Amino acid sequence: MKLCSFTADGRASYGLVTDSRIVDLGRRFEAPTLRDFLASDQMGEAAKLSSEPADYAFDAVTHDPVIPNPDKIICVGLNYHDHIQETGREETPNPVLFARFPGSQIGHGRPLVKPLESDKFDYEGELAVIIGKDCRRVSQEDALSVVAGYACYNDGSVRDWQRHTHQFLPGKTFAGTGGFGPWMVTADEIPDPSALRLTTRLNGEVVQDTQTDLMVASVPRLIAYCSTILPLLPGDVIVSGTPGGVGARRTPPLWMKDGDVCEVEISGIGTLSNPVKAEA
Image 1 (tube, one colour):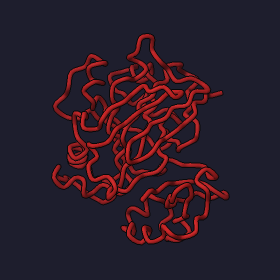
Image 2 (cartoon, one colour):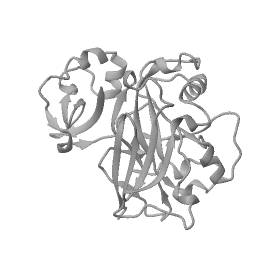
Image 3 (tube, helix red, strand yellow):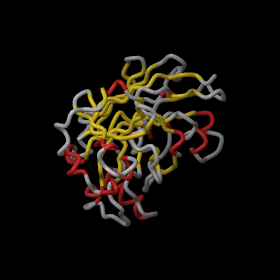
Image 4 (tube, helix red, strand yellow):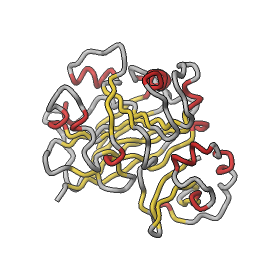
């Protein structure tokens, strides 16, 4: 199944994507948000509605981040070998983690916001992992059993602010810089998250192209590590890291600017597309 969050007719909701249309699950279930729906463990009931008449055309709604209100967004840095090499850093024995805040995210089709304070706005195509069950200290062997699904993510990064200190966070959670969508594909359709191809395009030109088996820390390793630190909850998001090819490491650097379009495509999931708009 494909599940999305959206706003239509003045109300926020979530739905089942069928072809190019949406069955509004928010009207059919008591759970008010997709995060609450994942916690309610009614995925099987939603699957039965795939033949229901659709409520909206997919392109006729405003798309919200797949999970608009996660309890936590855990991002992973330096998690592809080629990205480590292009940054000149050394591989660490444990994952490099930082946080995003929900207010930094935007949905499919909505503009990534290049902030007033910087012209060094970079793309980072990534695989997002959405947790579906309460869990703590999950083993790597059992880790995939707590996954609700996967989505595309653009971890838009304000590079000069990222480098203000040794901590990444200032440049990683500017308002409107994180694209998340267009939907999540449920985990039953992606048995092996290490067997996916991730491609990022800027204005139609491929700027990142990788296989997810080239991650340093695999998805099960990330879930096991993060769930050791604190409980993971339904709707939590682990953004698993970007491959090489980021704009900051090109000669000359390649920054996103007003009027650009950035796409993140992952095989078996779909394509997240966002225009870029400079903050007025």
